[in-house]
Image 1 (cartoon, rainbow, N blue to C red):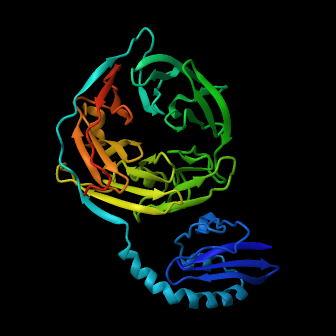
Image 2: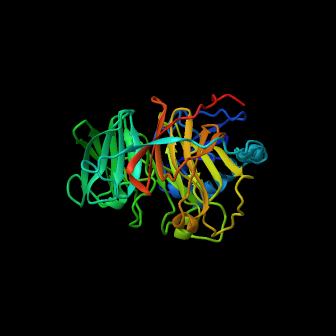
Image 3: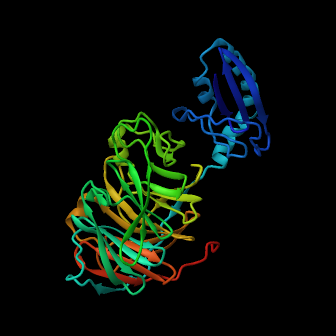
Length: 434
């Protein structure tokens, strides 16, 4: 028996049961006002590659197209049945396509001018106790600890107490044993309360550690992968909740237009795919590099933001993979014309809080970034995709994190790894201020 749940267009949902070559139509729900609720589907079904998703009673309706349904039609009986559904589909398909532009989430905004320069102070690191060689990530763990991951074989993580920036200890070493990590992959860090979640790409496991004043304590491990992964590790892993993670997709040889995959730990089938690469004459790894991105998740896990490194663009999605905002930025304060293959870096290092998204603005060609000391800017966005603040730092900064509780921004520089920089956060407008 083959059973699947199909959404046709945006207002028609059908449940099809195929038994020994015969089709049985279980449910067809039609809503002309778009307020459609799935109430009768009992069994989950998924064909991710063709945009057919898990659908249970009360789940969100995904905006798929009729061609998805046509693709799996492999018998004359099903094709005849399709005609019946097509009548219902055509009733509102014109309205659907006409309303696509009407409710298009894409908007073009003008970047803010630069505010005054941010002035910070340097907090020395006692090199007899701790040493930074090549910092990779810095994060605020629950307004309790400042954690910096470092590219070195021992003491991969340096732990400081917030807000005093008192150094506590170093933890972790390079290797493939228990509590050991490939140094190059300690960028894949998530958090859950007072726990760090580290991804180990060899075993494809998420490792959960409770961070305490004297060390890391292992809590659990969970497998995170998808069938047909083609040997590539996962990139840009972000936790939305315990049963939902997202990662980049189309990073290798996948024949796909999708940019992201949603995953559930311990389950080898992807939940759904979403976000579409633009139509360009690039494929696989080259296309992935052209549209390289960094993600940041809202603290409550209901949405996340995508910041493109080489495109002056950001997108905001909800936890179902539905695009909420697609913002393209026109910047009259930075002179550069972006073309395909021209790796001009716009922003990096996003950090998310309840109300804001903080990023480092670079606005330089990639080759210049590696040759000169770039002093970046701090950009602040709200979750509506509006830029609310922009100012230059007073020195080269390569990574940062934010504690809104203490009103501080903490940063490091690859040019001076014996210091941590502390800045006062700027005063920011409210979410509803126009």
